[in-house]
Every structure is written in structure tokens, then in C-alpha cells.
Length: 288
Image (tube, rainbow, N blue to C red):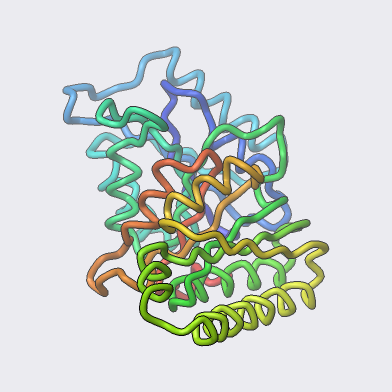
């Protein structure tokens, strides 16, 4: 997944994308396409000299770290160009900043990244401010709801470890018991039945933990809060401060025609960490 990257940068804003991908191992990344799109909807056709210098500085910084970089400046609609170029170049990962949108009051989320998440069938990493150069994959929080999407997220992480693309020190698995469901069970089901269901889920989580530990992950933990999935994941991110949150694009309650479900989108919007969204089906060139 980390071998070929399309990194979409906004040279007018703080460069969270560059700060995060700079922590990757340049020996494991074959190529980074550094893309800036001039938004034609605002009537602009060229970048200023200052903007050009910022873009060239980002390119130079990555090259000095040992990355192979292809610079690309295009004019068009940003999300269309990002998705089209990722297909054309058959990249394995799209990396973008969170952007901004005045409609949101908290962590501002741009139209571009939201549309990329809706349109792209590739893994997408939404970057937020990196904490003093901390490695982006150092501590992962992985959302688990036992859907195909969440198992795909675990599979993607395992592939990264197996191919030795980066070092992961710690993983926290989070499975949220939906409060509404738990309230119904508490009202109508016997306690023994509830305990049995929770025990089964715990066994499944332990099985995932064991498989990750066998790959050499030093520390694997489990969190099982009760509440609304997106809100509990966002709250946990704030508490344990993972370097990256990993979540499947679709959960158990999402319609098949949606590329990204409500929980994944909300986590990408409001989590204070960077977020990696894994699609339900990963193409061959994005698999490792």
C-alpha cells in the first residue's frame, strides 16, 4: 500500500501531508507523485512565484530524504484531478490534508477530501498535524465492527507488516457496542445471553490480537466502550493519541452502494489524528 503514493498538497495551507509522509522509509516507497491542483472554479490558471517556491521546497525536502518524487501541477477541479491521476498512475495510496470547510465548526474538513473519499476506490490517508515528526505508523488505532470492511483494515495493516514497509510499535483495537442495541438487549434479553455475545466478541478480538502479535507487533490492546461508534472512536483518539487511526470504509450498517459509510466519514472528519480509510475491495496494485 505504501509503494506508490499520490500526495495531494495545498501549498497555501500548513503542510500536514509532507510532515507525515516524510516519516516513511524512502527505501520502501518506490515513488511519490506530488500533486497540486489549481482550482479552475475560482478563475485562477497559474500559481504565483511564492507558491511555486513552496511547492519546489516540498519536492526538494522529500528528495533530500531519499524519496523518488514526481512533481505535478494541474489546473482543474481538485477532487476530480486527484482521483483521475491516481487511476492513471495506478498508485497504491492517496494522501491528502484534511482541508477546510467553513460549514464545519470544529475540525474543518474540506470539500476536496470528502469527495475523494466518496469517489476513490483506493486507500486514502487524511493527514493532520504531525506531532514533532512522530512516525505516522508508530501507534495505530483500528476500528473493528466485524464487518468485511474492518477485517479488510486489519488485513491491510498485516500486509504492511509482512512486507516490512514500515515499523508499527503498538496497535489498539476498538470495538464499540452500539448503545441503542445494548439498551434493547438489557431490556429484553437474559443476562446470560448478553454475556455470551460479549464473550464471543472478546474471543474474536483476542484472535485478531494474537495474529498481530505473531507478526511482531510489540503491544496490542483492546478497547470495548459502549456508545455511538463514531463518537467513541473520536473520543478514544483524543484520549490515547494514536499516530494514525485505521478504519474500513464501510461498516456493518452501511449500504453496499456507498464507497464510504457514515462512521468512517465522521471519524475522518472529526478525529484529531490522521486517518487511513481502507476500501472494502483493494485493487491488486494497492494491496501492498
